[in-house]
Image 1 (cartoon, helix red, strand yellow):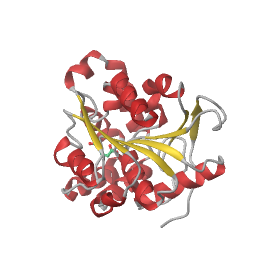
Image 2 (spheres, rainbow, N blue to C red; image 1 turned 60 degrees about the vertical axis):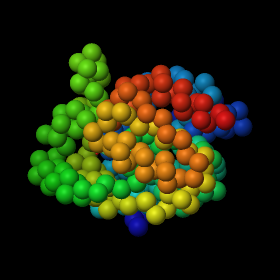
Image 3 (cartoon, rainbow, N blue to C red; image 1 turned 180 degrees about the vertical axis):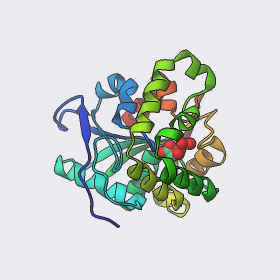
Image 4 (tube, protein in one colour; image 1 turned 45 degrees about the horizontal axis):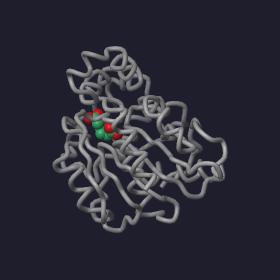
Length: 259
Ligand SMILES: O=C(O)CCC(=O)CC(=O)O
């Protein structure tokens, strides 16, 4: 495990966690904390929302890789400790969901409730990651950005929202090459299937019916069946379901966390 770094973050909603519970938002590989912008109005009404850039992403430091999921989780805890936050709800998408699963199983005293969006406990085809790592080592994130974003939104939604697609493509292309590559190495070896039964935080799993990156079968189903009492909701979206179905995703998140 490498040393923890303090993460770039933005806080929305009430300033004081005595006024509202803390909800931490954590995004996908190649994203920044801006990916949560469509959800902030609904979430910040009820929660003190802390959104983070993971190491190697956005405005956070880029330590040398390879990274492992416990490294990313250690950064989160160090950052929340520096803010005086002890307990929190977690909503993470894809890589952010993986960090959330790790936190919930290994630090159950810190995580109150969990929302896991479009994520996976394990990718059976590690060659896809080996190939992506080789492509980024070769040419950086810019040449792969458009192909990555094709998996983020359904074609119909993308055609109707070209400005979102353009912004998302820039977000991936501007992710530091070394940070993206080292994060792929964390996902390449990620296998949390055996730890799912130990998660005690009440969990909502949100999946995209048209997600080519983490399809419902087997990814969301494995998580929902592995975590005791977890509930699965499927939205008509691709990988970034929290953007494509922002209103429904925000509603599901609020309903689950407010229970
Ligand atoms: O989105 C993530 O955090 C990991 C899965 C992934 O890389 C999605 C994709 O680019 O296909």
